[in-house]
Image (cartoon, rainbow, N blue to C red; front, side, top):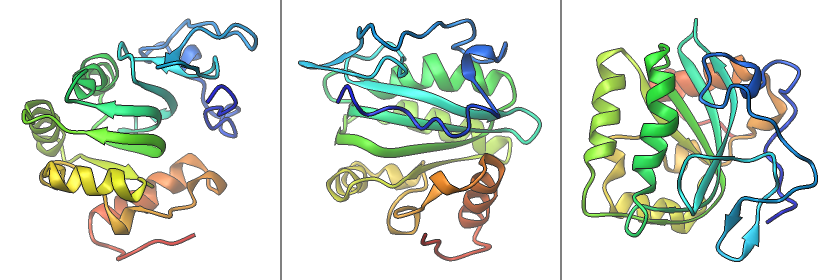
Length: 195
């Protein structure tokens, strides 16, 4: 796990620690000191904590004029034991929403498991807030068992994810292009994107 770095090819365009509106503004990173852990495994020091002991993130890009944020996640999304959606919502989403972000893309290739809770209040609150502003939430490139757990938890009522949102090769695109592709997909202007 310590060798999995957050996506870094957009660093010349955006760095959350240099963005005064980012919840990670002013953060300093080490290339050598490992402090974040997922169970017994250390994570690469470029990841950011949102307060959860199992789910970590990297704010890859935020555009306040276009109202979107691109966020990469790593770890285990565990709402059952750790209420991870609460940490994600309160410590990352809410500060961005307060700055005008209403469209959220979550890249989940590195989310290893999803454990749902019977309480979906945070998802409902998040979806209601962004929908009122014409926004949306999309979860991209989930593993099959993660997608199945999310479907079983009925997250499709709040979040866009599933077959049409998997196998999207976002790393080869510029952030605005990724957003435009997802916006078109969410709004039904295209059916499915592959590659």
